[in-house]
Image (cartoon, rainbow, N blue to C red; front, side):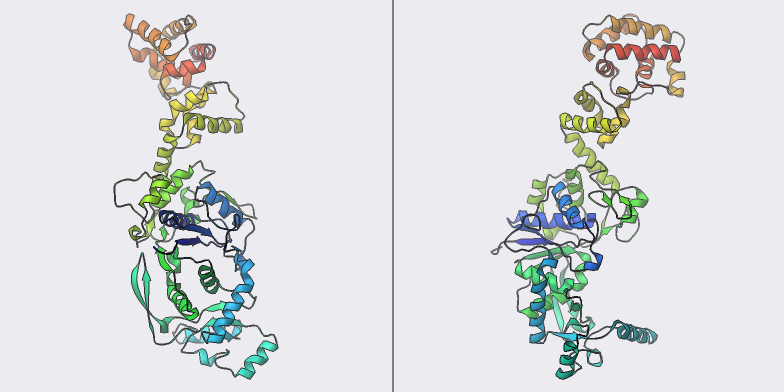
Length: 502
């Protein structure tokens, strides 16, 4: 590619960033970095009626958490700013005027009531109302009115919009990196509004102007924008500009059944559809991957496989490996089904790769929220527990007994483990522990196993009640590791309590 690759992620700040949007951002980032290009963040806030405070900050924080930072954007600037469309308002009017002057756009003064009447009339006749070549001369616009009439309306301050004049009887050739070649009959297109009466452009005008001025070479966006591709190509032609290359990504589909993945699916099935937690002004809270304990590496790896595959059996990719492997030509056309279980599979893998010391700090923080402080060796505990853990919270579920002595004992296990003579066995274990100076797991193991072997006692007769006394149920890592971590005083206390209780 002779021209430097420049891509943009252009979300609207109308609420939290959906993981479908995050996937779009990720694919843009991967493509840019693969080709040594720039990844630009542009906030498309032309629709002020839907603007939600805090949404822009949320978007930026989400991208930073996922380690897909932007090269340019509202928070870090760049040579093509400003990067909020609301701050580029004056630009758009001049380009709208340019289209008016060249005859590619026109003023439309139709009231919403008049347009509604036309729609109802068409519906009554079994037709669909489209504002375009077949009826534009019958409607209230600068094509059907005289120059004098148009001038009078403008001077009187009547509300108007500026519409694009779609050419009649043309077949537009479209190219898409993902979809391939397509053809569109211009007669089925409507004359979209480019500029609104509130002085703000619509997405169609603003994104074309901004992409051109920001020298965007590739537009990588969601499938929902595919119906607008013909219009956008026509706009580039009307301005006399070279259009970027387009790639429309497949939709993210529900885990079960058909349809686009929505936040309601997450609510129903218990998984996040947002990267970060989002709190609405009404007090509603939507869960986020970060707050639910997912690692950013796991989320990125998961998202990369939603609609793309490397062409190999490899599934675990670092961000750098994804950059090297990513090709738009390997993006699928079909919708990508979201799989919450696969996401947990990625999470489990990446949790195992975390250093025990790092997880220990996170585990300590979790315990503090529960009001638990402890001098136990968290690093060793984490090392013993993490194999069975997917989230840091699982470490508590697996190892809460390290910090809270059992107050009850599993009834079924108790009946099986505590037989005649079990009390004597456990009292002997207590004596052996009290006589042990080197309280390492290896020494404790050698001492108790040696006693078991020399006295020809079945291991189950000792180990089952011992584990039950220490843990309260039949779970946890090696018994001797548990004893060593708890320390002599606590371990002996728990065994004696079990002797008295069970």
